[in-house]
Structures are given as structure tokens and as C-alpha cells.
Length: 327
Image (cartoon, rainbow, N blue to C red):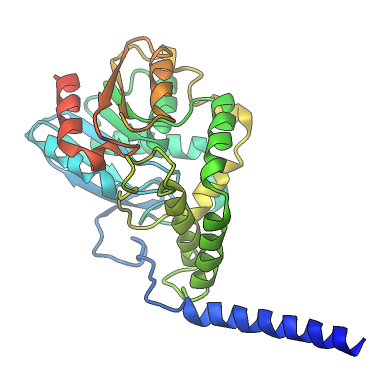
């Protein structure tokens, strides 16, 4: 009995020592960027009472407007800024969506699909009141753009959809099944443990910082998985400022009926649509021709030597394809 108690005590002490070691060893210089609600130097605009991180790149006088929608939900527009080269002919509007990037954090009841759609409509009304804009969406941003043009077919001139992940609940289920293979295994869970300890050292700048750091880090681990075709084999390098954990979690729990709305009405939009995919992405790439068939007038472009984030991976090739489409 005494021997058993000693063995148990030794195990407990080892566990305590191990946890203490991980906690101490995970101390570092991890930080989380300030939001527009705390950093007045960031370009921002109030949309529907929510302060959004927004950057407008002016083009020629009376130029048509392009609105850029980032991925996630929860990401930001940092990796998409190469698109500002289009400002020689267009006004470019970049913004971090509510609860994402450097924009204001809001309660979960404001992070619904309807909330995002109303936000986009308000952005359009402010930045392009005289003529319908062009939408360029990446990943989740492409899914959001699809839902918007389906429900507001007269409010958009054309759309460029870069690797939407899915457009209905059935597609979400398939995406989750494949995605789970890149969110499991000893390496992934070890990264999760280490990230959990690192998170404990995040003390600000706001109450969402710890969750944003943890989920943002694990999203990066997922995208950077060596077998994930989100990259061409050399790792996923697209940068971001800060991830929005709550908006990501809310969308993950969205009902199937809500997810089905992404692509349910896209046939109503008769303007031109371009689907764009990276040649390396053997996961989402083959789906894009299926998505294109849903629209009344859509084409497909494949960017060589690019993964999921084609704008970051191959900016010049992507810009060339976009310019041809817009011409």
C-alpha cells in the first residue's frame, strides 16, 4: 500500500513539475494587436454602429469601386493588399469584417450571416452609392459574396470568388470531414497544448485577446499542415494581423438552413462571375467548376503554383487574371 502511494505521489509530482515547466517554458514575447477601438491611428469607419478597420485606396475620379472580402470568418485583409495595384482603374475598399481582424469585437448575436450581409450592404451604400461595385472575395469572403449577390442581384456589377470552401450545408459537412484530417494527430495536439500554455501569458490588450490568440494560432497550424494543399508544399505563409475567435466559432455552429443560404439564390445574379483557384489545391480546386455551374454567367481561372491564398502566393499572375476578367 505504501509503495502504491509513493508511486502515485511520484506521478503527481512529475505531472505538476511538467505542467510548471510548460508554463514557465511557454513564456515569451507573444502579443495580440490592438483593435481600432483602442488604436486611433488605424484607418477605420463606423458601419451600422460598429467600428471597422477599413482602408480605402482611391483610384481615378469616378472610378468603379472594388470591395475586398477576406476569409475566415475571423481573418483579415492583410494578405490581400496586393490587389491595391488595381487602383490604377478602380477605387479599392478593404475592410476587416465585424468581430474579425482589427475591427471591433461584438456579441455573438451580431455575428450571424444576416449581420455580415447587412454590414456589406451598408459598406456599399457608403463607398459606392452611385453605381454597383465589384466584389472580390477570398475563401469565406467568397462565400459571403455569393450569398450577397444572390439576395441582392442588382446591387453588384460583377464578382470574383477566390476558392470558396462550400456553398451549402452538404458542402460544409464534406469540408469538415476533410479538414479534420489536418486537425488531428500527435503534432497537432502537441501544438494545441503549447498554444494553450502560451495563451495564459497573454494579458491584453482586450478581453478577446486570449481566445483570438489561441484560435488564430491553431488555424495557422491547420493551414500549415504539411499535407494540407492550402499551400504548395513549402508551408502556408499568408500573413494576418489578428484572428477573431468568436465569429469563427459562431459560424461553425450555424444551422444547416443558414449555410444553405450561401448558394441558394446565386442563379438570380446575371452579372459575370469569375471563380479563381490555385493549381496546388487538390482539395478545393476541383470544387470550383461545380460552384461555377451554379451561376448564370461564370468562368474559372486556375493560378499556377498557388495554394489557397492565390493573391499572396502569386500576386502578379492573380492580378493578370483579374484584369482580363474586368476588361
